Length: 308
Image (cartoon, rainbow, N blue to C red; front, side, top):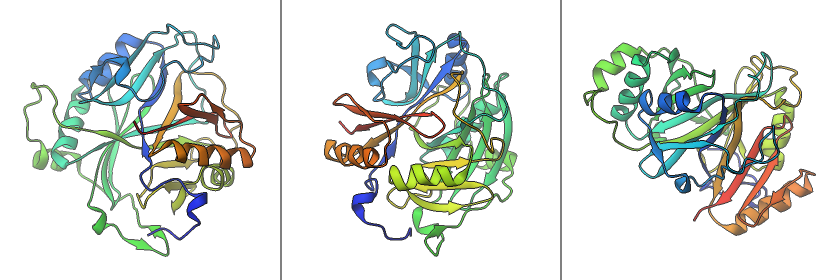
């Protein structure tokens, strides 16, 4: 397991990820992609725990902005906000590496992978056995990365010196699908899913550690080839940051792509403790009584709320 640190300096063990917000140019097209390629369903906007009235980079207010909330069951996974006036991110900028959707079993994962692989607007990136998980990677029509994955049981994870052992071992996608696809793809997708983790592109790992570990309160679970993996409660990672294509990147410009990363803590008292910790680290925190909003060193927006 992870090394021991004072609980006052850590996020609660029950911390979870919430829906990821993306700024998109083509709202109907992106909504159709996440619905048809990933088997998500459109939810009432009220079903999203995360706010969709976040400040728009172009106007300062998104009141009345068109948006779509997509998920499984009652769980929102992706919020798409229509912001067609924004430019696409440039090569080398900080931002989203991928949103990782976690499925409870291999059959659910295989169904999602098969749907995504057959969709004409999907771009398949690859697959890997990470030892803690099986993962498949795609890129959506506006170049946002997507990971679809299933976790092995926690008792099978190997921890050494406070770090979880992960790898990029080969995973044959065709063999996986042959073994685990259980339902006809012409039927509506079933089963649950959640945002398991979010992986960001950053300018340097040391600054990411100072913010996400020292200030925000995650624990380091792995460091691997220019990437930092962090989590709460002994998970392999709730967030990761890498410099693989963004080394030296500065603050983000207003672009399409990542709009907001959202986390959920168990109680309002946890939000208060986090706000105090962030302010001590001189992070500008906006508290509306329901959520905390603040930016990381690359101006990626984070929102933290308390569970209902």
